[in-house]
Image (cartoon, rainbow, N blue to C red; front, side, top):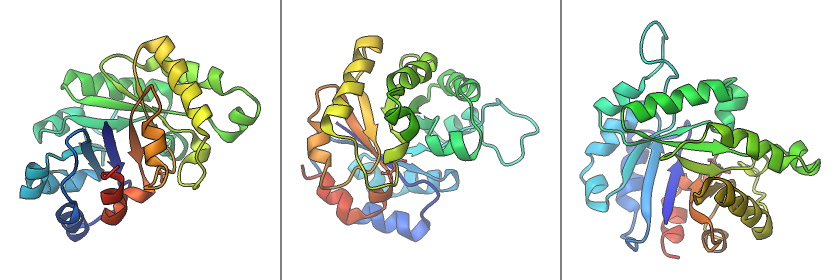
Length: 227
Ligand code: PGA
C-alpha cells in the first residue's frame, strides 16, 4: 500500500529532519514516499533515517523542457542526477495556479520516463463538473495522457485541502472506472487523514493514498501508518 506524502511548499531543514526522526517503524506493507520541495531532496535522501526507514524521497515538479533558457526550472535529467525515482505531475494546483495543460503535462511525463523516473499523474474533476454529472467525461479526457508505467492519482479538486472527502461509493466508482479502462489501480488524494485512511485504502482498486495537509504532522502520519 502506497502512502505518498505531498508536503507542497512547506518544510525546512529542521522540520524535515524532525519529521523523519519522529516516524515510528511501520508495517512493511506500506511504501512511504515523501514529496519535498526540490532544494531539500538531496538533504532528505542523505539522512541516515531515510535509508533505515526506506522512505523514497520524491519530487513535486519537473520542467516540461529538457534544458535551456528556462530560469528557475529543474529538468528530469537533473532529478535523475540526484537519484530521484518518482515525481508528481498534473497536480491540480499546478494546473490552476501555473496554467499547466495536458500538453505540458504530457511533455513532463515523456521527459521523466526518458530518465527512468516514475511520473505520478494527478487527475480529478472540479465541483462544477461533479455537480453537473460531467465528472466521468472529465476523468476520461484527463486519462488520455496516461501511459504505463505511470501511477495515476485521483484527486477531486473539491476535496483537496477542503476537509471534504467523496463518499466511499464515489471513490469506488472512479477507481473501478479507471481500472476498467486502463487496467491499473490508483491512488486517492484529497483530505486524507488518520481518520478516513483505513476505509479508503480498503477500496478494491485503490493502491494507496496521496496525503497533503495531514502529511506534515508526524503524529498524524504515525497514526496513518498504524492501520
Ligand atoms: P490535501 O491535499 O490532503 O491537503 O487535501 C492533497 C493533495 O493536494 O495532494
